[in-house]
Length: 244
Ligand SMILES: NC(=O)c1ccc[n+]([C@@H]2O[C@H](COP(=O)([O-])OP(=O)(O)OC[C@H]3O[C@@H](n4cnc5c(N)ncnc54)[C@H](OP(=O)(O)O)[C@@H]3O)[C@@H](O)[C@H]2O)c1
Image (tube, rainbow, N blue to C red; front, side, top):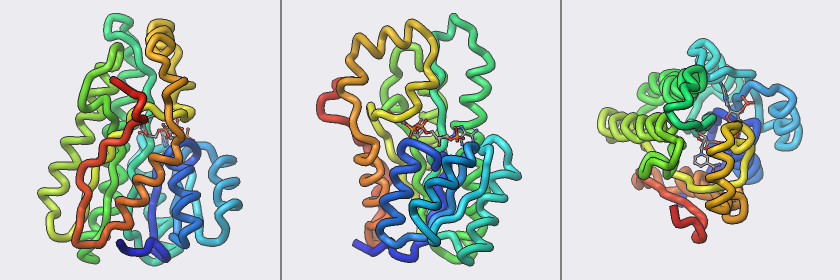
């Protein structure tokens, strides 16, 4: 295992959930952090909590200039970016027949294009340095399509494909991991407003079995802590109680 002390890690979607927990864990281990999301008050509070090793940039990841500005903030502050945790994502799920076209657009923009823009923002720099780690956050929904989650699952399957392609294209230099979390208690559930999805969540007991997001953060940190010559390319993590 390698230490993450002084590793410069850029995290998208750092204002809550897995992103915020990963930032806290890495901060406690002495990593340097470049945090992006739209809610500035959350990012500021997180940076205050972590201390001088953390900087932020308000970032709508659907805009490639914002992704580039986030990476620029990291390069200006720390001179390099060693790792990207590509985590921002949304899940306003509903059956296709509900025709929530704007939510489809937003999911595609955040979950696919946002992931690509963040990769674009760091890849050239990492290739020039000859090393780097990119951890993309997919979902078990990429491995099995859940009810009313066709579009979300499609976006998370895209992340799987992007991760595999990136790994093959950059092999030998960039370490690429794809993490597939199951049910964890974060604010992502607040984005679900469809009554049928809410009923399905209740039926499956999602809230009861949902794990602590810190556990996913620990898995992400452990991917970064592997020795450079070792790549955990696919990591599926779900609560033991989760059957789906
Ligand atoms: N929780 C689960 O059970 C679960 C399971 C599988 C996969 N995941 C995946 O895990 C990742 C993190 O989600 P989470 O569960 O931690 O949920 P969360 O607490 O809602 O966090 C989502 C993060 O994404 C950011 N975000 C959303 N839209 C954005 C945009 N346009 N630009 C920049 N940032 C944006 C949010 O920040 P702002 O609102 O401040 O911008 C927030 O920091 C997502 O990719 C999600 O799909 C979650």
